[in-house]
Length: 114
Image (cartoon, rainbow, N blue to C red; front, side, top):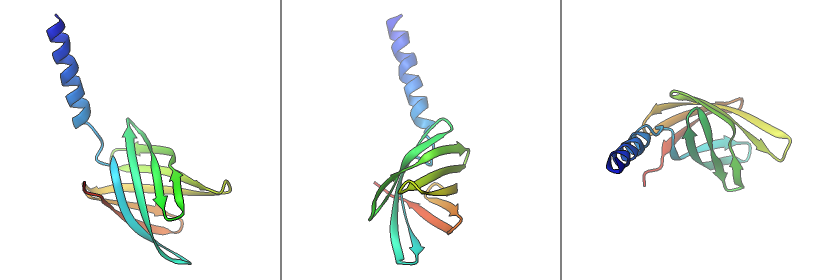
């Protein structure tokens, strides 16, 4: 009986690993601002239909808030200095490319290969 439980738990763990979202991981891109081009680095983590993670820039880390995933599409907000909120929508274009949109424009992100 114990052997059967072990096998079932092992298989459940394998299926959970394989079911991991393709959005998960580290992504990089660039964005233009009035002060010039700056690099963006995201870490995305998907659990069910919830998206968490952070945006990392030369100015520091900003956590992803209100993140939601629906298939290849997702959305989240970024809060800066407590008074500026940016709404972001995105889509997984391919296994190695994400497109995000805000009121300020569109950004292409590429998967960081380990």
